[in-house]
Every structure is written in structure tokens, then in C-alpha cells.
Amino acid sequence: MLDLKIQSADQPGDDTAGDDTAETETARNEPSASDAISRGSMTGGNGPTSVGPHSNGASPPGAAGRHVVVIGGGLAGITAAIRLREAGAAVTLLEARPRLGGATCSFSRGDLQIDNGQHVFLRCCTAYQDLLARLGMTGSVTIQDRFDVTVLTPDRQARLRRSGLPAPLHLTGSLARYALLTPAERIRAGRAALGLRFADPASPALDDQRLGDWLARRWQGERARRRLWDLFIISALNIAGDDASVSLAATVIKTALLGRNDAADIGIPAIPLGDLHGQSAQRLLARLGADVRLAAKAAAIEPPARPGDPFRVILARPAPAATSPDAATSPDAASPSSDENELTIADSADGPVQPDNASFLEADAVVLAVPAAAAARLASAPLAARAAEWAGLGASPIVNVHVRYDRRVTRLPFAAALESPVQWVFDKTRAAGVTSGQYLAVSLSAADEYVDVPAARLREQFLPALAAIFPAAADARVLDCFVTRERRATFRQVPGTGRLRPGPGTAVPGLALAGAWTETGWPDTMEGAVRSGQNAAEHIMSELAALGAAEPARDQRVKPDGIAARASS
Ligand SMILES: Cc1cc2nc3c(=O)[nH]c(=O)nc-3n(C[C@H](O)[C@H](O)[C@H](O)COP(=O)(O)OP(=O)(O)OC[C@H]3O[C@@H](n4cnc5c(N)ncnc54)[C@H](O)[C@@H]3O)c2cc1C
Image (cartoon, rainbow, N blue to C red; front, top):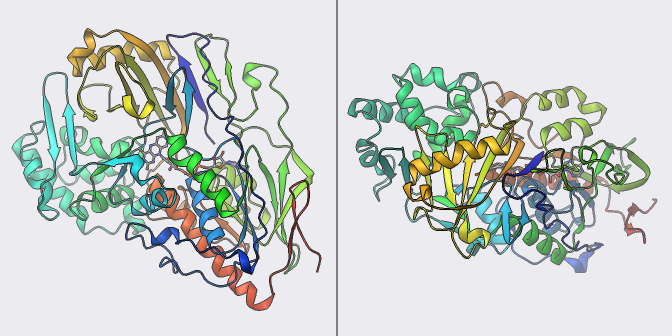
């Protein structure tokens, strides 16, 4: 799914191949009654998550002894695998890349651990925080005591900070003082935001509207849209603010800004994403006895030919060794392109798929937790019509410009910027393990205009832009500057996409969908991904429970070559 290009402006040939050679912890699983998982359910963690009928942690009967293959090791697949394993299912997790974590990942660059792109969450992202707790990673993120955002321009700054008052009063004082809008604009902005309070995000009529049009009808002029609404909508929905679906924007505003008064407090990883999600998930899944297979790509899913038959998940042939930089097909391999300053990380999940019909897994159920386009390719005949719609969700890029200075240039942990190409900038010094100077990452959402711009030109544009908002940067020496690009960071969250997002269930019993792009009631975010994984697991458990009433669980065998087979009945 990801097409991550790493470009070096300063260090030609620097190897950013990453730390994706992490040892694979693979545990074979043959659950039995004595193998019952007694750990707490993910949903019993530290937040009021309520997803699906069994979100109180009680597992429906039926999963025990069944074999479920989860395809895709991003946050959605990780969540589904944990939940299903906790319910007693034998779980095999297939991930095309050599690491878990999907769209949240890190790689090494010299002494730094670089994230593919800055990720933030809000206190209202309860399912995501439950997952962090389950992974033992709650202490590896920081959350603001109070929502507090500094907004910088080259000549002044403003601050949006909540008070302790209940919502929506918690933001009124801050909005009333927001110096980048006129007093009249502030009043009108407050009214428009409150208007969203009563909007129903699930309404198709709302999903058909562009946010820009909706706001303009509520007296939100160009300045208010650019100086206030864009601040949050572009980064939350990864789409130009005016083009966003009103429905998804309403979800963000209602949940984060008009919900509980602490809902929008911002959380940030304190360690590299690869450690926060991928490594910790691999450890937990190994402990739970799940069979995690990295660099293992599913090529096709064959539904049961007759009721009672198993699914067959056909694996892809291992990709041939790369013969040229452009043909780099080994998972997440980094290769220099014709421009020595550019390194491309090829994505194993996107390359050509050669089914290896001799390598397959048999399963009672399958969770397909891959990006929309990959799911559309893997979906089999009965789902073909719907699958074509999933591909229609499209993709929107995110670009990060990483700059390492020889000294500290700002004391802010992060800031938003206006009247500047910088949208948001984050201090990554500590999280990346930098011990001297300062490392900043500029995060550019809805980055269509930047995604194909060479790193050297982005450097020319963004170093002066950073110096304009952080004057100390003008005197600092730049030690390194490079760019990460995610062409398909999220789907394009524009009007009309609500009806294209499928729920977890499909027309094929036993085959469930997960992924931040599926219908979760949330935008394409880490929270959405985790919720989708929970939804898919609950769905499969319900279906297996129904199946269990008709057909007792059969033995599972794992052949020496690691291919799980079903005992013939
Ligand atoms: C740069 C960037 C910044 C972002 N910022 C934020 C943010 O600040 N806050 C936020 O909440 N969200 C953010 N997001 C979005 C968030 O990362 C995603 O919504 C979420 O991680 C998606 O998880 P997922 O499991 O649904 O999909 P993915 O993470 O895409 O996982 C799918 C997995 O399936 C694998 N796969 C694909 N095909 C196959 C196959 N055939 N066989 C086996 N495996 C396969 C892929 O390799 C991948 O690992 C950002 C995304 C990016 C890229």
C-alpha cells in the first residue's frame, strides 16, 4: 500500500534501508481447551471503548479451535489478531512486509530512528489507547494536560487552548482571543461550529456535501476557512479543507471539539512508531501464541466451495531479487535511484503478485485487513461488484520534511503554522533518540502539490519557511534534511465516500473486512483502524459461533513447513 520514498538532500547514498530486518518471532499455534487465554480483553483496557456487541470483553463461543487467517499486519490486522487469539482462535497473521505496523513505521538513518510520518492522536481515541495499553505502550506516548496549540505566522502568533469548563464552553475563551481572525469572524466561527453539534455524521445527505460550501453558507469566508477550519480539518482528514466530506468533518468537530472537554487533548508518540506498534505487537502476538508470518503476502482468497469446506488463502511466490533500483521488490528494500540523493523504499504490498498454488493456508475464517485497493484485488468473485467501489475511495498523500539542526531552534513540542507552507511542525528530537541539536519534522497533509517535488526543492522551500517562524533556525546549521513521502497515506475523504466504505461483514460468510478505510464512523486514522479490527474480530466470532452450533470445531494441524492444514473430516 505504501509507496515510501526516502530522499536525502544532504547525504548521498546514505542507507535508509531501515531496521526492517527485525527478527521474526514466529509462534505456531494449536489452541486447545487447556490453551485458554486468561489475559484481559483488549476492550477491557483503560478507556470507555464500545465497539461491537461483545465489547465488554466477553467472547462469544465458537472461536476456540477454529483457525482464522488475518491478512495485513497494520493496526487493524494487529487488533483483529489479538482479539481473535484472546477468544481462543488459532490465528495466523500474514504481513507482506518484513515488519508489523503497516502505515505506522520507522527506519534507521544513521543514529536516528525516523518515522515514516508524524502520527498524533486525541484523548477521545479510546480504542487506540486500549490497544496501546494491551501492547504495554501506554507509557510510551505523551498526552497534553489540556488541548493547547500554538499557531505561528512569520510575524505573529496565536494560541488555542482549552479551559477546564465543560464543552463547548472550554474553547470559547480561546476562540474569543484568537488574534488571527477579526472579532466578527470569531463569533461567526463559533456559531458554525455549534451548528455541527446537531449534525448527524451518518446522514448520506451530509456526506454528499463539500465542507467549503457548507461553511460558506454559514458565513465562513476565505480567511476563516484558511485560518481556523483548515488548521484541524486538513490534518485530521488529509484533504484540502474545502474538499472534505461534511460528514467526516462533523465527526471530527463533534467528537474532538464539542464532545468531552478533554477530548481534543493531543497525544504524541514518545518513541519511534516501529517500537510503539510493530515491535510491541510482534512480542504480544508471540506471547499469545499467534503465528505471525512476515514477508508473507497473500495472493488470493478462495472461499469454501461447499458449506463446511475451508477457505484457502494462497500465498504469493517470494519476489525475485531486485535487478534494478526501480525493480526493487524485496519487502521495504531501499535502493538508490538514478538520482544519488534519492532512496526509494519499495513496497512489498504493492508489487506484482505471483500466486504459489502449492503454498496455501486453510482456514475457517479470514479477516482481510489490507488497504482498500489491495482488498479490492484480493476480493473474490462474489464480492467483485462491491470491491470495485472500494477502489473508488482513492488515495491522498502525506509528505514529511525532516530537518536536523545543530542547536535548539524552538521550545515548542509542536506548532501549527499559517501564511507559511509549513502546516504543522513537530519536535522529534527525543523520540528519535537525538542527543544534541534539534530534529524537527514538518508534516504536510493533503500533499498533492509536494508529493512529486524533489527533495532538494523542498529543502529550498522549507528551510527558509522554518526560519521565518523560528528565527533561531536562521542562525542554526542544518546537519541533515530529507523527505519521506506516503502517496497513499489515507483514502480521499471527500463527499460521497461514506457509501463506499463497507462494514466488517461481506457476502461471503466467514470473510470479514478491516482497515481504517472501512466503515467505522471514524476518519481514516489509527483510531479507525483499531475499531475496524475490533469490528471484524467480533463479526468473525459471531459467525464462528453460529457455525459452531452446526459443526463442531475440527482439528488443526500445522505441517513442518508451517502451512496450517485442516484435518480431513
Ligand atoms: C504519513 C502518515 C501520517 C499519518 N498521520 C496520522 C495521524 O497523525 N493520526 C492518525 O490517527 N492516523 C494517521 N495516519 C493514518 C493511519 O496511519 C492509518 O489510518 C492506519 O495506520 C491504517 O491502518 P490499517 O491497519 O487500516 O492499514 P495499514 O496500516 O495500511 O495496514 C495494512 C497492511 O496490510 C499489508 N498488506 C497489504 N497487502 C497485503 C497482502 N496481499 N498480504 C499481506 N499483507 C498485505 C500492508 O503491508 C500493511 O502492513 C497517517 C498515515 C500516514 C501514512
